[in-house]
Image 1: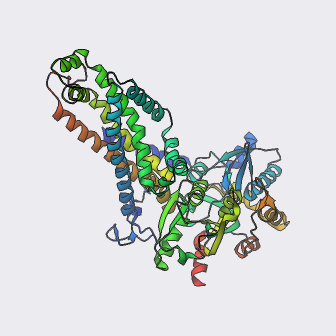
Image 2: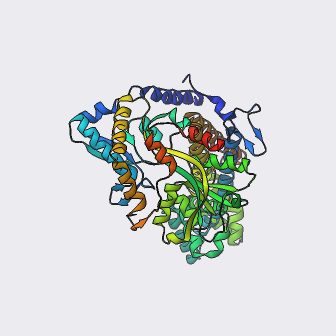
Image 3: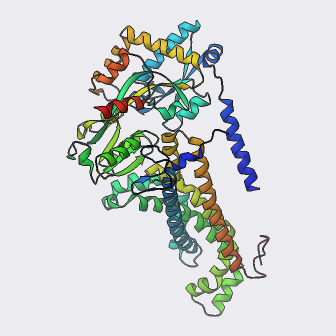
Length: 302
Length: 252
């Protein structure tokens, strides 16, 4: 009886995998006039200012992409914002709940098995955030300390690799989401928060006393961040890439970057102070959808 | 279904290479090793939580039925209402973030202790309610009989009321013990590396969401079923012929 149930459950899971074939979000968008856009609510590239309003570099870029889609389809489009998390974003693009998402998703080889990625629009560097008075300056100072990363992100793996390579020994705890991880750092349950620089900068800017925190050390790894969509939807991918190329070419993406990373931003009107890094410049000069693995090999050869 | 990759469990968690013994050594462990460790956390959180729940739940449940102690009864009622009316996840956050801010000593407590308290006290309210109903299900004559032979209150509970009451409430206690295993997944919310957390992280790292999900589900089934079997065996051993009928028809 129990075996029977298990077999049925497995069959159901298998069947839903088949269902994901040949998606055509553009046709769906054209007929419904609605784009289901996945957005983040507490990340550096996309966050909420409350009241169902979503903002940020990638959120606004996605809105411009939707404008371009609207021109392409010759029809005004309404955006339906759907908040996604690190854990549910892949299933949601697979089952079509969202047409695409522009947040803080790293394009890596493991995810490419499950989802498709548009051109990389931002290359994030994984850094260490810590209390300004902690005395931690680099990864070597983490020996014997407790570090926090967010569940469902790739930072944990990087830390394990560094732990082995640099002979440092630390305890890793994993927060439920970025806000939770930052709370662990703020409440002193963790000594350092290791995560993408933009996420760290955004959480620090939102903190009660941003001056109490500092981002230290060199980049632990590089994370090419891109909009994610269904793996089997080449038409939508082409449309996203065309729009991104246009935004790079006419300089509007660079202006958008300035608006969100250099100028003061809501909710606290503080600046993230994150000048455009070299890796992102390179990604804009040669638009590509290379996974993170292509970057880390570059790092090792350095 | 054909493209399922069960080998993923034998992969090393650092470089993703398949390890021959499927377990790894030292700091270099496989996903299987990691999953079993996560299972260990789940079992530890659940069992310690269950012990707290049974002890505190019994005390509070008995308190609520004591004759001539209105303040203890009120305290017991307040305990049950407090812990039963706050969602478990909120309780976990209260223990983890709010209480340590109010009581500085608690900052030094390991997260494990705080989560176990949250889970144990939440379940204790439910067990207290069951203990109370078990005691009140007994005919009044039992209590009077105990008083008639000169037992103190403690003695009448110890030798007359509780042995009967526990036998009546054993079936719901089994459900409660299984529930605490499943509820232990909330420990993930405060960074205890339990099975739920393993699933989310390992699924993301390997891209093998479904395989990890099946493995984790299997372990949950195994643990809940084991608790069920053990508790049922205890129930059978404790059964007194002619008291509580085996079909659950109740009464005496």
